[in-house]
Image (cartoon, rainbow, N blue to C red; front, top):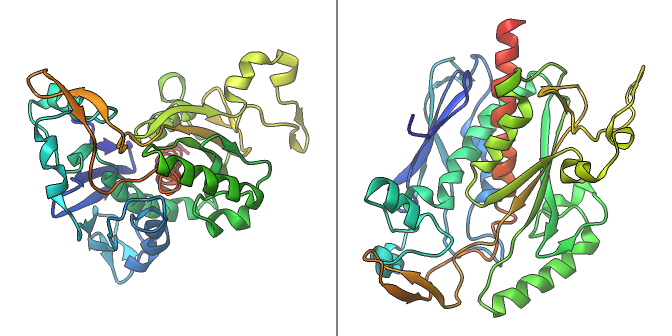
Length: 350
């Protein structure tokens, strides 16, 4: 396997590079008779697309999704759905000096080591641009989840060291950080300006909640739902850690504290994050995802060239200060893809 396909029943293959003519996704296993139109992609794609936030890359991409197959008269047909997103504004000349130099923190070095060749233009296949196809596929996955009334919501709970103190879901997309705490937004904005002036970048933490998930999703032993969710979100380039439910805090708790009492009305707490023994328990599924700082920074860094000789690199071009908030819909999409696949797997045995 080449690692470009995700899922077992609801299978998604993404393709394309950052500076190629287009990128997209092929989705196989989507049930028939689900409503799907090009306009269904607009909201999710607008949240991920570049050139929107002040701390994001100035690359302007409309990110309009075209449906090439698998839909007839506004309904899915059960055959492969092919989606395409054209790259409209590439400036490959900004990356000419990177032909011979590896960028610290990027996949340049490892792609060269694996394949003996790499697309240096914006990172090629390893670029964050690839995630546009994931977001598009996630929209289709949500159509499957809608048949079971499952909803997925993601938002920023920490950015540049600024932590939210409350979650007001209605305010998430009313600010440049997908932050659910309006009182934390000014501190986040100040942190961005501070770091931009230093030519540096920021990381953060994204929280995801999946609601309405029925009990029973997940497979025993190696295909646990939490294991699959961890793989899904860790497949996003900027993600360096994931925790579910109490997560790492569980290591500091007693068993009497961590166990979720079971009452006739349901679970009294949710330290398990909605998953027990790798199978959903019907409670809210909760994940938190650690997002690293963007590696493309405007400060001089030490690196080497293709011959292993030491070089100094000061990156040029258009780059985000942080993957947040554009990574938020990407994380949402990966959770949707996972849950859609496991929902269809469960239906296959029910």
